[in-house]
Structures are given as C-alpha cells and as structure tokens.
Length: 271
Length: 292
Image (tube, rainbow over all chains, first blue to last red):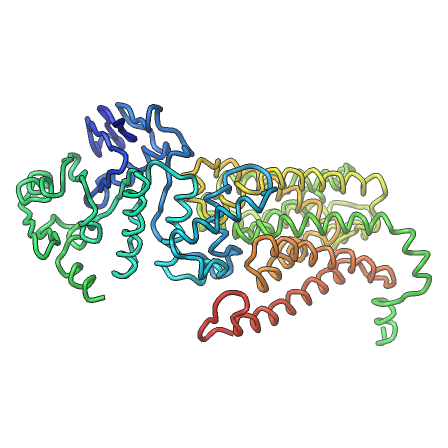
C-alpha cells in the first residue's frame, strides 16, 4: 500500500528557530494520525505544509505521488470552530455548499446536482434537521458537524483537522471525533488530527507525532506518551499518568501547562 | 417659503408625461446603477466594508472636484479618486482594525482636498453642489451610456468571480485552504468597489453613496439568510430606490438624492420590522430567546 502523505527530510524554520528538522514520515490510507505538542511547536505549520500554504525550509512533502499543492482535491480540511456573525447570509446547507463548489469561478449554473450532493453530505453527518438554519444561530458542535460535511465534499483521501474539537463540550467532542473516525475506517481516508488534547480521540489514534522544543517523536500512543519520551522532548521532567484509558501529562514547562493539566480532563468529564 | 411651496418643490406632477420622455436616459442609468449597487452591496456587507465605502467616496469626491477645477471630465476624475482609495485600502488594510484606522485617516483628507478644489473653482455653484448630492439628470446621453457601460463591465466581472469571492468573504480561512486566491480576490473586489462608488456618486453624490451600496443589502439581510434571496432582494431594493427616486424627483425642484435615500431608508425600516417579527416567530431559522 502506498502512503498518501509522505515527508522526507522535512525541516521547517522561522528565522533561526527550527520548529522541526529532518522529519521522515509516511501516513497510510485509513490511518488515524494525531499531531500533538504545546503551542508554538509547529503543529499548525505542519498542516499548512500539507495544505501547500507553507513552504518547507528543506526536504520534500508529497501527497500521493505528487508534491503538495494549494487547493488539492485530495485534501479535506476541518478548521477550528469559529463563530459566524448573526447576520451572515449563509445557512447550514450553504456552508456545506462552499465545500462542494465554492472554489469554482462564476455562478452555480446547475444547482440540482450541487443540491443533491449537499443533501447527501448533510445526511451523512446528521445535520439534515438544521439544513436551513442560518450558521450564525448554530451551536459550536452543530457547526463542526457541518465542517466535517464540508470537508468530505470532494471525497478526500486525506482529512486534515486543525483542533476541530476546541471549545466544544464533551458530548460534541465525542460526536465530531466519531464522525471523523468513521470516515477514516469506512472510506479508508487518512486522518491527520492536530490537537493539544489526545484524550477525546485516544480510542481512535493509530500513531502520534509529538512536537516539542524543536524536536519530535513518532510512534504509537503507547510508545510516545511515556514519562521518558516526553521528559526527553521537553528537556525537563514531566510525568505521564495513564488512568481509566486516559492520559494525563503533569508538570509541563510554563505556558503549556494548562493544556494537559488534570483539572482540564476532570472539567471535561463533568460537562 | 410656506408649507405649500415646500410641498410644491418636493412633489409636483405637472407636465409629468413630457418630463418622463426627457429623462428616460436617467431612468435607465438609475436602473443599471441600482442593479450594480444591489449586487456589490451584498459583498460589501459580507466583507464588512461599509466604512470603506464611505472613505472611498470622499476621495472620489476629491478626484471629481479636481477634475472640475482643471476642466477635465468629472466622472473620470471621480473614478481615479475612488479606485486609488480602494486600491490603497485593499493593499494596506489587511486586518480589520488597520483598515478602519486607515479609512479614518483617508476620509477627512479626501474631503478636505475636495473642499479646497471646489473653493478654487470659479464656475457654476450648482456643479459644486452636485458632486456632494448627486446630479444624474444633468449628465448628457453620451456620459450616461459610458456610465451604464462601465456598470455592466463591473457586473460581468463580479459574476465571473462570484463563487470564490463569496467563499473568500464568508469563510476566508477555508477558502485559502481550498486554493482560492483570497488576497488577489480582495484587491480585485476593491477595484470593482471603487468603480461602483464612482458611478453611484453620479446619482446620489459623495455624501450619500451608502444609501445605494449599503442600505439595500443591509435591508435584505434583515429578512433572509438565503444567499440567493439576499442578492435578489438587495437588487430589487436598490433599483426601487434609484428608479423610484428619479421618478419622484421629476416633479420637484430639489435634487434626486433625498428621494433615493428616503426610499432606501424606508425600505430598510420596513425590513427591520419584518425581520424582527420573523425572528420572533422563528420563520427565518430558529426561535431566538430574548431577541426582538
């Protein structure tokens, strides 16, 4: 089986600061691949490289058998949830429609075909009920379902997700990540899931790329999410605790602490 | 002036039929500019550029005033002014905050320049006033044709970039990820907007351009969220305001712009009322708790 994403000797630098260097990585069809790390470690830049929006400093990034390019139809992209202004002239189905043909020139001349595709996508993510509700009136969880539908519009082989669960409550976190996992397993799409919190997707993840302090580690969650590996990456002692099938990282250096703090997990479970 | 003569100045329909024939060109131009304003306005609202329109129109006014002073074509002068301003905003103001402060700086400067040129100008006073308040009836047939022709070109361009421009306007981050040239489209739209502003100024004047480019689209947004319905309503409202304004103005002795702006404003008020009733009943989406 050929990898759908492959990086060879990839390095990314901003000025003199290296985010990561000499990254060799193959992501297979049907693989659920999580990208973890503190803020500023280059997780989002990693996605931008795959989207063709960020050039590598060195090395090569391929999608299938071709170099990365902007607007590749191999890719479906699910961004962070953001709120829309209440008077945005767009209903749920129009948001999905952007994914279907929003990038094409001119007007939509054959609405029938586009509408059938949109209906199909809405049904797939269980959003048919609120198809005609303005996006400004939808909850964060409902919006993210639409984002999944929007991303699936091109039947992509790779789903790139940039913190798609951020600011969702636990119920919606589960629903949205289950949807993404379904696409991964049933359609054999590769999923690249950028997150600072592995627990909501812990049951789905096949492999992890952990970025920190200009270095990285790739492997299964069991291999990477250990006290030794993370202490080594951060260059200071952090404690990784496995409890009830969840992973809690304690003692992360300064600014990044809140992301993995146990209180966050507890708050999430209470919600 | 007593109440009767004021009313007579505003509404008088003597010899209406003969007048109508004389101004058919104006009516056509008004219709085309209404169509243009309605279309462009929807993107102005989506891209949150209402303030920019105002800034562009002030510089457009300065350009027109300068053209008047040196005896050049006024429409051309106003085009130069507004396209320059629009390009400046498109290139410099990437972030919203930036944009607003740049507009705030450009606007009084443009208006000041315009007033300077006008006070140096020694021709007819009506010409001066026309720049600020609209003058479509005084424009001759050749100019009207050029005006309508330019409007058609802008509309064709707008239709050609319609879907990606819409994508880039309502969902810029994803549009960029999908390969839509977001930045280029932003600048292209600013040029189209600049031209539209310069054209609209011929009907309603520099001070009142918002009535043509903002109000109709804003009114449409109050009553529907369907993208297609917003465009159709916005165009219908803008054309009603321009054509209706010209027809009403025929009888009176005052300029067209108060009629156009008043019609436009009334449409907006009605839409707001209708919109709040619909929102309360949940006709246009969901029932919103606590909103009116």
